[in-house]
Length: 345
Image (tube, rainbow, N blue to C red; front, side):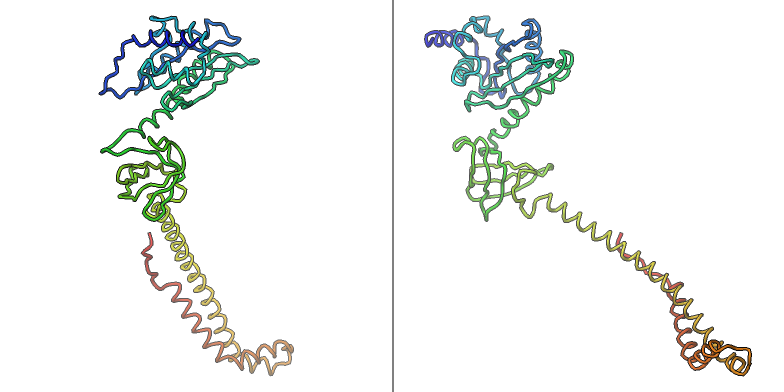
């Protein structure tokens, strides 16, 4: 079995490696899909569709199983070597082709559903970079949903590749669960070229900047850490999202202040109407007491309660008239005095 593997790798080594040092495209091998309870012809057509969609993905150079079988009987060797999903074998095949990624999968039928499972293997990291399963009721539905499946499968890998590029001599590392500890950055680093993935404390921070999407660029002496807007465990005080929240709070305060001012104006108008009415009523009551007291007290037709009311109005007439006039004047002021304009817009 080992001899067969070396023989296979020997033949693969003769394939032309067209990728040069200047090229940025990553080589990707597509293995033929397995068929389980589905006609091989159907699986073959789906395999061709997967191949076409992968070929359209920017940043990758696709090599299919058919390409490799032009030199060797790859599929036969693969089956005999048990290389369908074994990590070490996939790494050997990818290395021989100068490819970093291997896509393999299976199409089968479970009940009334068609299942298409795709795995994207990273030979450099010796582990699966992405995997996804599409469950559909018909082949027509599979044809419609296959392109988004391929796009999603490749998207995460493409993003990881972008983060691994060096910029100005500095390594670019993606970090999540990030927070600042004094002049240092702490969090979970992804795919650090030396330390791998895991909790990490940076060296002293030289600068922090933000792009239009609020992605932070935290620079140290040798590394540039990239932190998405939602990847902070605790956002820095000068983070754009914090500034937006402060502006939003200011707008809320301004709205509340405006409502208070408008509400105050309404209260003043209502008070003016009320005071004017009370003032006129009090003045009228006092005046009635002065003018009607003698007549009510001397006539035999007046009742006891009428005499008591007349007595109260007469004795308090000056107070009622004075208070009533002041209330009426105050009410008139609230009603007709010009209102100051609010500076709150």
